[in-house]
Length: 199
Image 1 (tube, rainbow, N blue to C red):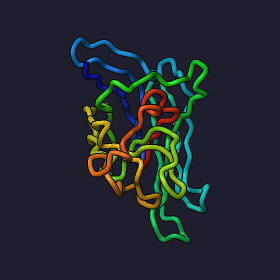
Image 2: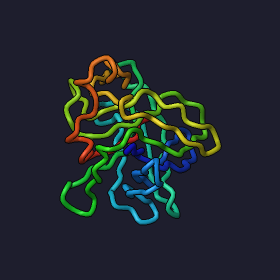
Image 3: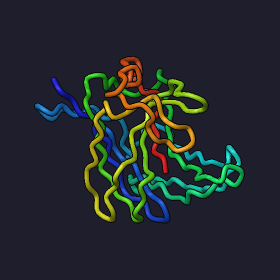
Image 4: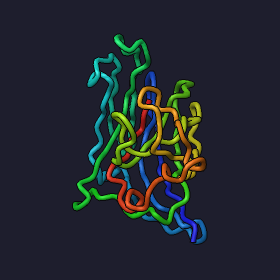
């Protein structure tokens, strides 16, 4: 039975925006859903993390406005690296409470309904907490093409996520299809522990 993880990402308004509203596992054959997140009544606590943790100048903000998650910000150059920094909206579960993630090991894709108000090719999504190299954690997908100004679905097959990505750029170094040891593992799919949107 094929399943698709559906994550609805709703609008944001400012310089840079990606956003998240409700998430569920959908059975492609009969439409059953398992809710992961709904910002009208959130299960998870969401927070921003920006590159100032490493000396950068990027800023971001997250608000849940009338059940719509809005993530806005500016991704700036990190002065001592002379390279772009990051902004991130993230949540982590305790794995034991009401904020635990459901088992998505039968899923085949992550589907996001989203829009942005600026053209930008640096949006990314990641999940999990497994060490991914130097400083990184979790599985990351290649850069997303986010619809401009109008909501639409973005589907990312789970086999597009990789544990081997560049800490500096977020780019995938080794794809899951090139080396299945970098594919999301069953333990992570059974409990993501963390979910994040990057800009």
